[in-house]
Length: 211
Image: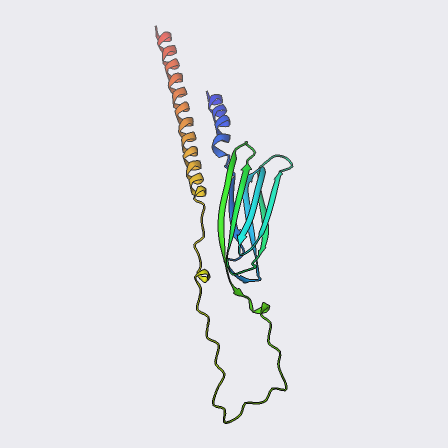
């Protein structure tokens, strides 16, 4: 009887334990200045094959596409990176699309988004005005004084924007938990049924021996 239990666990355990493929997106910075570069990293987990396309638009124009499989067709963790340089003020809109497949042939469509805010030009990119040694010193009777530069009021584009989060990741985690619980319940029900059948067989044998 124990052999039956062991066989059931062996057959059902891979269904419960195997994880689904997943993808996440991360940027090196959430806010940069014009002329600076931000690095986008897409991390793939429990993946044996992938076809990923990363595109940055808006305040930058960058893209990268990668499709490949692992050498032994088994799950692995893969990171794909892309650098985007801000060419104007505003927002860099980053979008990741494609699909990933696990070693158990489970395929998942990918659709991730994230924004990076681009502010004014960085100080390193601002040229300094040349110094004129022949400039006449200001006269004492000249009561006019140079005006200080008024601070530029913040623009609407300078305000940080909310990062768009793909809710599909939480849904996939909930589905995985439900799937695991269902698998455990099925195993327990099968074990209980087998025990009941075995008990009935033993009772019949004892009854026959008694008479």
